[in-house]
Image 1 (tube, rainbow, N blue to C red):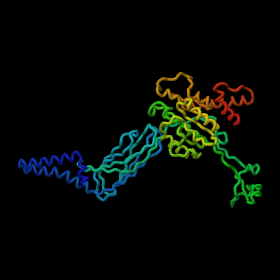
Image 2 (cartoon, rainbow, N blue to C red):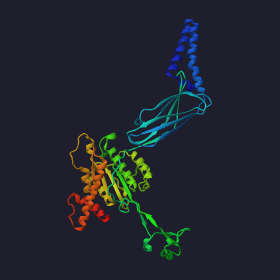
Image 3 (cartoon, one colour):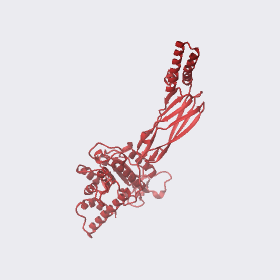
Image 4 (cartoon, one colour):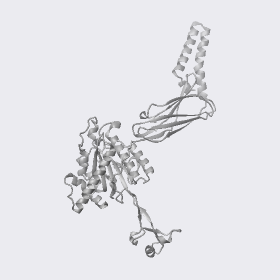
Length: 454
């Protein structure tokens, strides 16, 4: 009851004050009729508080968000299913769902006619232009009377996450390397022929075809051994996102970091659809979203894309000054695609280390200085400083400016690889001299790999 009286609204308190005033004035003036009016005015909010406070209601809420993973700019629908499991009516419900401000205004609903077994569903839409992970809820419920004199507040604890992923664009197919096969295709490797040392075998199992028995291994071990007919080679790719604070310019959705994350998301989706096992690392050397850097995502594109996009949705700026390369480990890697911001001489050792540990190193270098004054169009054909620096470090790099299309830059990256490969093949056959100057550094390891692939 104390809670019920504390839940008196402004109207209820005004009624109570007016009734008490009327009673006092009636006693002082000796007006019996005015006393009855004052008692009636006081009794109305008191009786309402008693009724609302003694009501036994049990509200159940089920909140669903469809879909829970959306791209920035796309809406999601929130469905609220409310049920009253109490035995007595609960009056009027005032509902307010708490949502982050980037998803829009807080939705409010007024529901009446609530009784035992009452059920109601309400829906509303949320939309965000900012990527991230957001919690929808908890729901605040205020139970009031029909006169608006008393309101009692309740709150559900349940929340539902909504993940807003960065925008992606489809990318054209370009020549890529870096799988254990040296191509983007995951092809089975047959072991039908070859010596015992060249064949992968296993113990014979009931039901195995006797034509698969490898007799040399069986004679050596004394037990039947059968061939593994095929063993898939896995094409692997690492997507590196430079999220250092010192490497980016601008704020909000118009910053160079958001452009880098969007580019990384498009590249990760493209590589996954090409059959690569993809992992995501940042400048801190750790995989985002709680994924282990040593664990590669599944090759299935449908299973691979979701965790990658979820991880990219939560990438934030990092205060470190250098790119951590601890994720490289001691083993060589296939393909590395880096989306970099501002790079300088201090980053050269880390960038060269990545080149030495990968078969193919590709980079999309953002010309971040233009993000501070994106209204000023760069001169046509102006080379990006970061791309030129990366080329001297052995990367196949292309510059990306605020008004550039990622698809065009990706195609240019493929043409750069074709020129490097052609130069490496001509140099190997003596038909044409190799490139000189900075292009020589660019064409070195990549051209040698391309020539071997051909």
